[in-house]
Amino acid sequence: MSEKTPAMTIDQEAVVAEVADAFAGYEQALMGYDPAALDGFFWSDDRAVRFGIAENLYGHAAIAAYRRTRTSVPQRVLSNTRIIAIGRDAAAVSTEFRYPGDPRIGRQSQTWARMPEGWRVVAAHVSFQEDVER
Image (tube, rainbow, N blue to C red):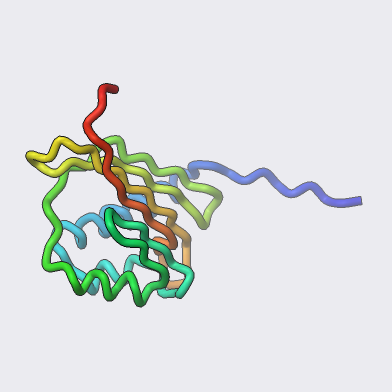
């Protein structure tokens, strides 16, 4: 006879708030282009993944090295940001963004996990689509 596993709670308010704070910190570091701070938001592990506009990065070292090849990131405006907390220790964050003067819609997805040192991005994906009717 097996015991039933308790149902996972989705969107616990406290967890959503913690991840929202971490995401806001990440966005601030990105817009201020602080590579050291950005490195700190990613899981320091070879299994971390970041798929960018033109790059596929595997592992924290590759993600950090890529950051050092950039000098800045264009300012952007976020919209439709969604945070889904999955239990107490994981969350998915999805957002759209636009760069001023660029008709494309940027899309960013991040999977966050609670680590002993705090919330970290374990996987990220950034892409664009042409402006479309909604």
